[in-house]
Amino acid sequence: MLINLDKFKNSKFRSKFNLKEKDLIYIQEKGLETIKNHAKDFITNRLAPAFPQNDGKQTPFRGHPVFIAQHATATCCRGCLEKWWKIPKGRTLSEKEIEFIVEIIMTWISQNC
Image (cartoon, rainbow, N blue to C red; front, side):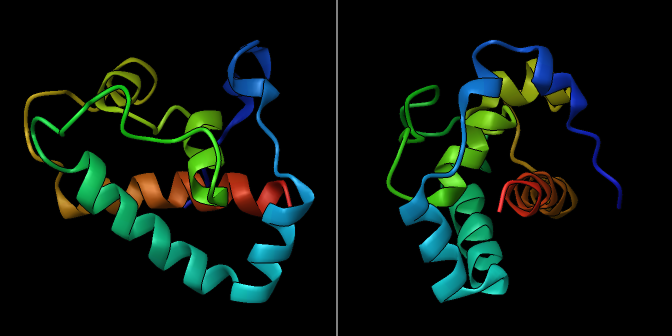
């Protein structure tokens, strides 16, 4: 699947996110498949519920490359998913939507390594 992330280049907020050296080292040490598994776990546990706990504040701004990618790609909360990706709030994410969100995150990470 081809994910176009060009729309985030024009967002002052989204375009400021980038991977730090420690993030790049972490990705290199763990490998992209492990990072993808982490992304799926984070999305499944933090975003997939219809009404996630602390929605809008559940994704830290640092601490893992996936968190950085989530903010850069507006996959950090249900409000951003609805605004930027047209994935409605108030219902549990489907497995297909979870996979799509993980693909968005991994595309951004791959483009920024």
